[in-house]
Image (tube, rainbow, N blue to C red; front, top):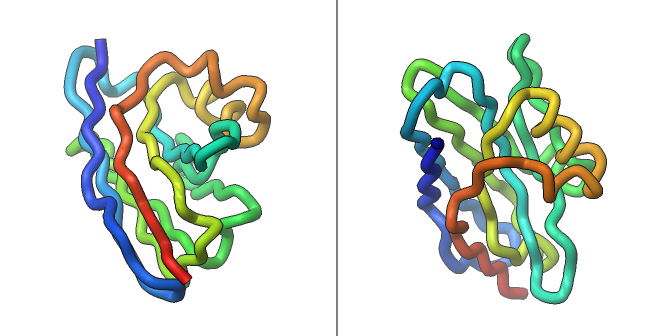
Length: 129
């Protein structure tokens, strides 16, 4: 079992910044990879960012260039620095964990998101215009 706890959400104006953090706890954490997803009201959950086994950061096109993902596998943490925020970034942001294949698949292909094993409860990000 893996438990994920997100923090750092809040409300900002357009152009502002927020930093989200996720901490994982549980068993066999070394086999899991973490990722960020988000879900806006009335929309499907979508991938945001992750870091692969070789340290490559992957982003959805909608956040590329504005968001930066970083992590420390020794501390089981994954952070998301969000800059130049837009109203369309408003969503519940979730931290998720599963195998590298599963989280990368979910990031790239929304149809695989439902197969990801572990999810945090989410943290709300609201960007006002």
